[in-house]
Image (cartoon, rainbow, N blue to C red; front, top):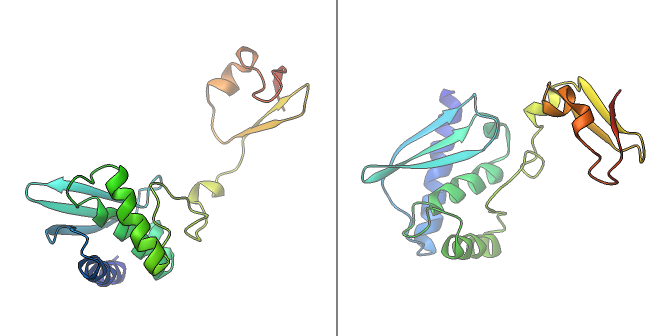
Length: 166
Protein backbone atom coordinates (compact mmCIF):
# COMPACT_ATOMS: atom_id res chain seq x y z
CA UNK A 1 0.00 0.00 0.00
CA UNK A 2 2.97 2.35 0.51
CA UNK A 3 3.51 3.10 -3.19
CA UNK A 4 -0.22 3.48 -3.74
CA UNK A 5 -0.49 5.94 -0.88
CA UNK A 6 2.42 8.00 -2.23
CA UNK A 7 0.78 8.02 -5.65
CA UNK A 8 -2.57 9.07 -4.15
CA UNK A 9 -0.93 11.86 -2.11
CA UNK A 10 0.78 13.19 -5.24
CA UNK A 11 -2.52 13.16 -7.15
CA UNK A 12 -4.28 14.80 -4.18
CA UNK A 13 -1.83 17.71 -4.37
CA UNK A 14 -2.42 18.03 -8.12
CA UNK A 15 -6.19 18.12 -7.53
CA UNK A 16 -5.87 20.69 -4.77
CA UNK A 17 -3.88 22.98 -7.08
CA UNK A 18 -6.56 22.64 -9.79
CA UNK A 19 -9.23 23.67 -7.28
CA UNK A 20 -7.14 26.65 -6.11
CA UNK A 21 -6.58 27.72 -9.72
CA UNK A 22 -10.32 27.53 -10.41
CA UNK A 23 -11.10 29.37 -7.16
CA UNK A 24 -13.30 26.50 -5.95
CA UNK A 25 -13.38 26.84 -2.14
CA UNK A 26 -12.33 23.31 -1.11
CA UNK A 27 -10.73 23.06 2.31
CA UNK A 28 -6.98 22.88 2.79
CA UNK A 29 -7.55 20.78 5.94
CA UNK A 30 -7.34 17.20 4.74
CA UNK A 31 -6.17 15.54 7.93
CA UNK A 32 -5.73 12.09 6.49
CA UNK A 33 -5.74 10.24 3.18
CA UNK A 34 -6.13 6.47 3.42
CA UNK A 35 -6.50 3.54 1.05
CA UNK A 36 -8.93 0.79 2.04
CA UNK A 37 -8.24 -2.49 0.25
CA UNK A 38 -11.45 -4.15 1.46
CA UNK A 39 -14.11 -1.73 0.20
CA UNK A 40 -15.81 -2.75 -3.07
CA UNK A 41 -19.01 -0.72 -3.18
CA UNK A 42 -17.49 2.77 -3.58
CA UNK A 43 -14.32 4.40 -4.86
CA UNK A 44 -14.00 7.18 -2.31
CA UNK A 45 -15.40 8.62 0.87
CA UNK A 46 -15.07 12.05 2.45
CA UNK A 47 -15.69 12.34 6.20
CA UNK A 48 -15.76 15.53 8.25
CA UNK A 49 -13.56 15.15 11.32
CA UNK A 50 -13.55 18.14 13.66
CA UNK A 51 -12.31 21.14 11.72
CA UNK A 52 -10.93 19.05 8.87
CA UNK A 53 -11.71 16.12 6.60
CA UNK A 54 -10.51 12.60 5.93
CA UNK A 55 -10.56 11.06 2.47
CA UNK A 56 -10.57 7.32 1.93
CA UNK A 57 -9.92 5.74 -1.47
CA UNK A 58 -10.67 2.18 -2.54
CA UNK A 59 -7.70 -0.09 -3.06
CA UNK A 60 -9.37 -1.26 -6.28
CA UNK A 61 -9.32 2.32 -7.58
CA UNK A 62 -5.52 2.32 -7.38
CA UNK A 63 -5.49 -0.14 -10.32
CA UNK A 64 -6.98 2.60 -12.53
CA UNK A 65 -5.12 5.30 -14.44
CA UNK A 66 -4.26 8.66 -12.88
CA UNK A 67 -7.21 10.46 -14.50
CA UNK A 68 -9.71 8.06 -12.91
CA UNK A 69 -8.09 8.49 -9.50
CA UNK A 70 -8.03 12.28 -9.91
CA UNK A 71 -11.74 12.16 -10.79
CA UNK A 72 -12.53 10.43 -7.49
CA UNK A 73 -10.24 12.69 -5.47
CA UNK A 74 -11.82 15.80 -7.01
CA UNK A 75 -15.28 14.35 -6.31
CA UNK A 76 -14.36 13.95 -2.65
CA UNK A 77 -12.62 17.34 -2.40
CA UNK A 78 -15.74 19.03 -3.75
CA UNK A 79 -17.58 17.66 -0.71
CA UNK A 80 -15.30 19.82 1.46
CA UNK A 81 -16.63 23.02 -0.12
CA UNK A 82 -19.20 24.97 1.91
CA UNK A 83 -22.75 23.67 1.25
CA UNK A 84 -21.44 20.69 -0.75
CA UNK A 85 -21.62 17.73 1.62
CA UNK A 86 -24.28 16.27 -0.68
CA UNK A 87 -24.55 16.17 -4.47
CA UNK A 88 -26.71 19.29 -4.67
CA UNK A 89 -26.77 22.12 -7.22
CA UNK A 90 -23.58 23.80 -6.04
CA UNK A 91 -21.61 20.53 -5.95
CA UNK A 92 -22.86 19.70 -9.46
CA UNK A 93 -21.94 23.20 -10.72
CA UNK A 94 -18.37 22.81 -9.45
CA UNK A 95 -18.13 19.29 -10.93
CA UNK A 96 -19.43 20.50 -14.30
CA UNK A 97 -16.93 23.38 -14.33
CA UNK A 98 -14.04 20.91 -13.83
CA UNK A 99 -15.48 18.45 -16.34
CA UNK A 100 -15.77 21.13 -19.04
CA UNK A 101 -12.35 22.68 -18.53
CA UNK A 102 -10.24 19.60 -17.75
CA UNK A 103 -12.15 16.75 -19.39
CA UNK A 104 -12.91 14.89 -16.17
CA UNK A 105 -16.09 12.85 -15.76
CA UNK A 106 -16.98 13.77 -12.18
CA UNK A 107 -20.46 12.49 -11.37
CA UNK A 108 -22.44 11.68 -8.23
CA UNK A 109 -21.95 7.96 -8.83
CA UNK A 110 -19.59 5.86 -10.90
CA UNK A 111 -19.01 2.24 -11.84
CA UNK A 112 -16.07 -0.07 -12.32
CA UNK A 113 -16.76 0.02 -16.06
CA UNK A 114 -16.58 3.84 -16.31
CA UNK A 115 -13.33 3.77 -14.30
CA UNK A 116 -11.85 1.22 -16.71
CA UNK A 117 -11.68 -1.48 -14.04
CA UNK A 118 -12.86 -5.04 -13.70
CA UNK A 119 -15.61 -5.32 -11.10
CA UNK A 120 -14.27 -7.56 -8.32
CA UNK A 121 -17.82 -8.85 -7.84
CA UNK A 122 -17.87 -10.09 -11.44
CA UNK A 123 -15.37 -12.79 -10.47
CA UNK A 124 -18.07 -14.51 -8.43
CA UNK A 125 -19.89 -17.25 -10.31
CA UNK A 126 -23.62 -17.38 -10.83
CA UNK A 127 -24.99 -20.08 -8.55
CA UNK A 128 -28.72 -19.66 -9.24
CA UNK A 129 -30.48 -18.88 -12.50
CA UNK A 130 -34.11 -17.81 -12.27
CA UNK A 131 -35.97 -17.87 -15.59
CA UNK A 132 -39.37 -16.61 -16.69
CA UNK A 133 -41.51 -19.39 -18.19
CA UNK A 134 -43.36 -16.89 -20.38
CA UNK A 135 -40.73 -14.57 -21.96
CA UNK A 136 -37.49 -16.34 -21.05
CA UNK A 137 -35.92 -13.41 -19.17
CA UNK A 138 -33.13 -14.68 -16.93
CA UNK A 139 -32.30 -13.39 -13.46
CA UNK A 140 -28.82 -14.60 -12.42
CA UNK A 141 -28.05 -14.70 -8.69
CA UNK A 142 -24.64 -15.24 -7.13
CA UNK A 143 -26.00 -15.85 -3.64
CA UNK A 144 -29.03 -17.36 -2.00
CA UNK A 145 -31.65 -14.64 -1.55
CA UNK A 146 -35.39 -14.28 -1.02
CA UNK A 147 -36.01 -14.75 -4.77
CA UNK A 148 -34.09 -18.03 -4.78
CA UNK A 149 -35.72 -19.31 -1.60
CA UNK A 150 -39.28 -18.19 -2.49
CA UNK A 151 -39.35 -18.13 -6.30
CA UNK A 152 -43.12 -18.87 -6.32
CA UNK A 153 -43.81 -15.52 -4.58
CA UNK A 154 -42.28 -13.49 -7.42
CA UNK A 155 -43.22 -12.67 -11.03
CA UNK A 156 -41.18 -11.57 -14.03
CA UNK A 157 -40.43 -7.84 -14.07
CA UNK A 158 -40.94 -7.63 -17.83
CA UNK A 159 -44.07 -9.65 -18.53
CA UNK A 160 -45.47 -10.77 -15.17
CA UNK A 161 -44.87 -14.44 -16.02
CA UNK A 162 -44.09 -17.24 -13.59
CA UNK A 163 -40.48 -17.71 -12.49
CA UNK A 164 -38.59 -20.99 -12.06
CA UNK A 165 -35.12 -21.96 -10.87
CA UNK A 166 -32.95 -23.49 -13.60
